[in-house]
Length: 491
Ligand SMILES: Nc1ncnc2c1ncn2[C@@H]1O[C@H](COP(=O)(O)OP(=O)(O)OP(=O)(O)O)[C@@H](O)[C@H]1O
Ligand SMILES: [Mg+2]
Image 1 (cartoon, rainbow, N blue to C red):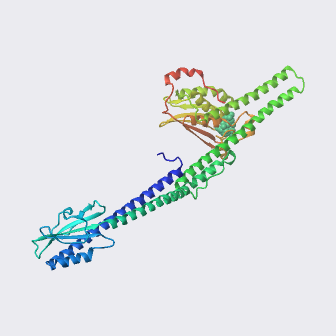
Image 2 (image 1 turned 90 degrees about the horizontal axis):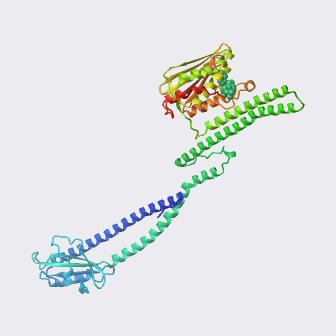
Image 3 (image 1 turned 90 degrees about the vertical axis):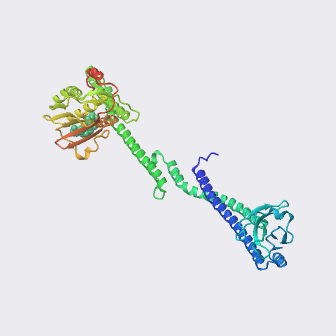
């Protein structure tokens, strides 16, 4: 038999079955106790009869008539119990017997008698051919005033009344058990229903949650502990969803906002250009301006696409063994001209034996972004330094500058997309506020972390920590051969 799929059904069945089995076991135990009690009473009763007959034979050994009278008076014609008593002399001749003793209860069907000093015990069970069950016992008794001449007392106790009593008891038990099964099922259903009610409440809340109602939560205060865990997990999931959703909405709004300016610029310039006929030089300058704006737009779209891809769980990176010192010197050579233009000294300090398994393109992009930031925010005469070192199983890369620093209230937000400390100035300078967001995504893709420390007017330090012991797709020698490609330019 298959269990039902619903918890309500299962709980009901389990509860009803276990309660019913308990009731059944106690009922059987009670029934057995009753049967044992009746058997013990029968034993005591037959022992009493034997005692009375033995007493009579001892006290008045020759009074056969008196014995017959005692038997007739005491045990014949009883309403609820059929009792047959027979006394035989040592030679097996009848001395006295209850009137009407069935022929089938002949002296030979009784068991071997127990001694004169013994109680007759439980005896044997006899089922008569004409119907009826009897308990039959035999006991020796001194006949004729001497213990040596032992006669036999035979007692047969009818079981009809007890059987009727037990049959009636069993009949009632069946009724009680059927009723118990019904009550257990109903009570079990009630209890199970109460138990799963909180689940229904959770389902109800979950069923009403839409993207616009992600702030809803399940009240856990009145819930049973196990279900409260479920509800708390569900609430945590909702909080995560709400946060992601809010970030997504903010992100979309930010994108729309950021795209508006360059698109408006493009449109405005195109409209102005078309208002009158212009010289070739004027057209050239307008087209150049349009191109510049378009480049900025496509750079932004590239960066956004990259961040979106980097945050997707399926994104794979292709690691290869990189000689960090060599890589950093290549990057420095690439940015040297930029640094010289800005009047800044760009230096690289890296141990020669540092080899890490990283995605080369992404790594260059991250370091390039940090160097650009350092150069952008450091006044002429300042320094920008890139240091790489090993810290156990971690590669630490620190890009520091002696620039203007970041105001404390902005430090926590500089890794957010589109966050710029001075938006107007940065926008004019073509900065998008996506560089550090990209760095953060790249570091996360490598299983590392990034932190920033900054002091106003003293400089900024960005530290990347990347695990060194990640397996590479390509061995070091092979990757060295490919390094002539030169560094990839950052966004
Ligand atoms: N080394 C630094 N010194 C001072 N301020 C910094 C430094 N690095 C970043 N910032 C501040 O953090 C903000 C965010 O930096 P991020 O690199 O994300 O964007 P961005 O440089 O403005 O634009 P993008 O890198 O996309 O061209 C910058 O606008 C800048 O104000
Ligand atoms: Mg930047």
